[in-house]
Picture (tube, rainbow, N blue to C red):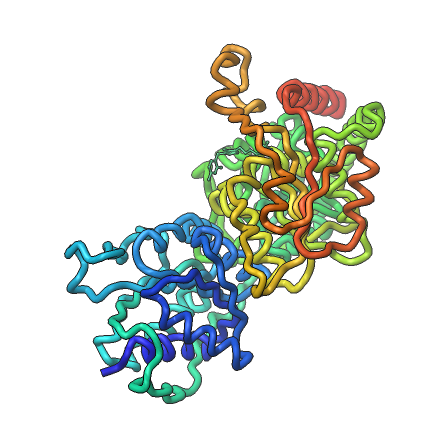
Length: 551
Ligand SMILES: Cc1ncc(C[n+]2csc(CCOP(=O)(O)OP(=O)(O)O)c2C)c(N)n1
């Protein structure tokens, strides 16, 4: 009968055979056989092993690694609550289509429900989020079964045969002994397996309407490039969110403020990626009086307004947009930008949240080498959504699958480790504090280069801009939405052995961003959020005024 150690070795060997190169492990006893197998594989130079104490952080680190390497990544936990701590990352992976492979060590099936220590029902723990689950047990003594399950799991996670990538779970019941011993044998090499991919996507002919727009929501760099190329080829206005990887070149930087004014004239929307950031775009995607075309290579498509008319893999455009239409957007954008820049200049070197976001984006976009950026959820990504557009942009990742404020620090760390490049992350104080354990990285672990720019307004700025920020809710606002915490970031960050610096002026921030990143750095920018609602209203009014005169 196979031992737990042999079982784990076979499963790990097959994962490596299937091309998995990064393993994230959270220590435990039941998953010890996987720890030994991964450690040995790392010693042989076959994989990179990343050990994390906090499973929630381990899950998001794995997610970031999979984005950075564009490959499936394994995360291994022990049994019990450890597994449940992966749920946020599993959900994000499910909604963003990331190949996350969970190995959850389990007790033998006969012990489920017996009250045995650290034993619960792990099958089904992630509900509908998984692309597949395989229940394995060393007691089955079927190496072919385990190998076949791993192959299927990798194919399901990567979506190569159904264009539906996402998380999978191998729940593996193991019996003691859980440490290597004389009875263990090395697994026999099983040879290679290939789950042949589907053919590449085929572009569909699309007749371009005169007053059409290209919308780009959260998307990969190749998808972002397609959106930019389509806008360039057709002369259409490009409305691109920061994590679309299309917010550059022809993109209309202030589109969000101009859209309400121009929207009634729009006849067609060609949409890439997953737009989530603004209400004007959400309203556009819910209109039934225009043609709404979704472009996606994946099996699922985005249709939050339940109004999509056509889903295509890629676009072969026929015809051009009306040059006057584009010129009006561009003229309004120039005018609005001029007004915003004038307001910023009047503020001197003083930093607010929106200004920090704008400098962050512009400086990183302007550096000679393409920069890697993570944007946290909440207000700052929306501020970047108004930042100036230049010929180049950073490559951006944001966890927009479910737009959680959890796991952002770990995702940035994973992305930097995966890409082998420095990452700059822009995030709010609550988002940063929520995942401080992303900084909990032992001295023997591969260490990334990440610079976190934390905009600390002592609470959540975004709520001030939403309905709950209205004056009639003012008495409850700070307590139940703003949620100030008064934490000292310097002490917290230094406690995790990361480098801390406070930045107070626009000039200082720009200078810091231009310096090469060394290890893990945190730049804290302390700002006030009390004027956020008024600022937003002023910008919306400006946008409305300008589009009115452009009509
Ligand atoms: C896991 C999770 N919990 C709660 C929320 C709801 N939420 C959205 S934004 C936000 C506040 C974020 O504050 P901060 O990170 O400081 O950013 P700011 O709004 O100040 O820019 C919260 C709690 C969420 N998106 N995800």
